[in-house]
Length: 130
Image (cartoon, rainbow, N blue to C red; front, side, top):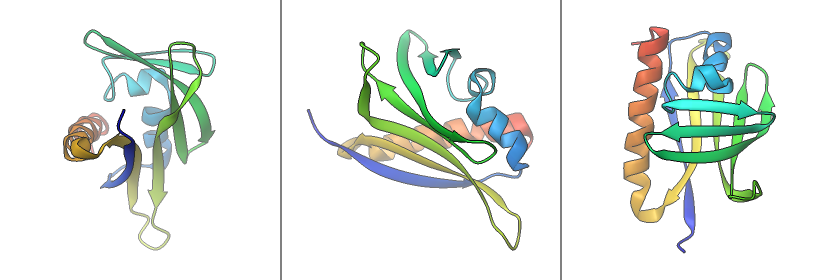
């Protein structure tokens, strides 16, 4: 199996960090833009897209700032891969952006980036940041 590579993308978002945090940290918020449905049981989140399901563990969160989900295998054991959503606020301008950290196969980074761009576009429409 190929090693996946880490990549980061930053998206400017016209929103308060508090509102944005609700959409990146709760099952109901995530199911509005990230996946078709999101369920949580304790620290485990199940992300559902069409007919596929992926499980992740909420590895860390800092209220109003960031969340990190670690993908888990079928035995609910952590894999080495995760995705992180980090709210950045420029100290001078107070501009808000969302930093996405994720992993993809080397030859699929462009495709994965495009997917994030589409999802973040949905998120921006949802919170009126277009």
